[in-house]
Image (cartoon, rainbow, N blue to C red):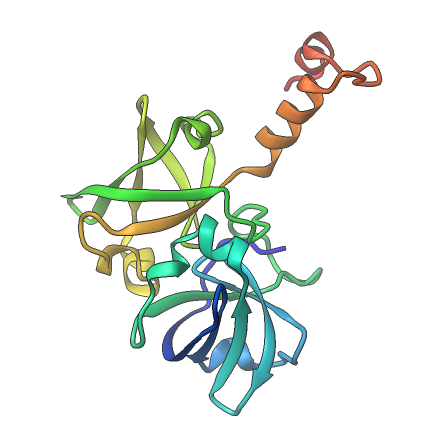
Length: 211
């Protein structure tokens, strides 16, 4: 589990491609502190397991399913990636609960400046848009952000200078593919409402208790 607060930007040193998989070696510093083989690191929002480490880099394997669902299939050596270690019980939850399990991808269709802020508009599928609500949370390439506006097939987020400087989002060009993870709560509520046997939890029950 992660928070969406990026700790460091890493750089891809090496890509080893298998028939339907990829092994990445990523240069990093901060996220290697207290990390060991078998630990999880969110890499552009994708929860990946550390399989090997050196003093200044770590290696992860990306399986076929992850390549299909995320933007990891078009990465290149030298690309910069947002990195975050898994949440600890003693850490502050500065963002929102992020699982590192990507729902799908979106495309950056516009970026505009508004004084110190930047507005980034992302277009995505209806299957993902149904979980995105104004003032709700969204993780874009692992970055915890607040949804500012929503339309039928796109949404906007506003980026503060700190987020601009500490993540890769504004370094991406128009047309770039980004990983999206929707808020967990909406997906669980939908599952409960659609279940054939909801054990007494239905739409009326949820409304009664403020959901």
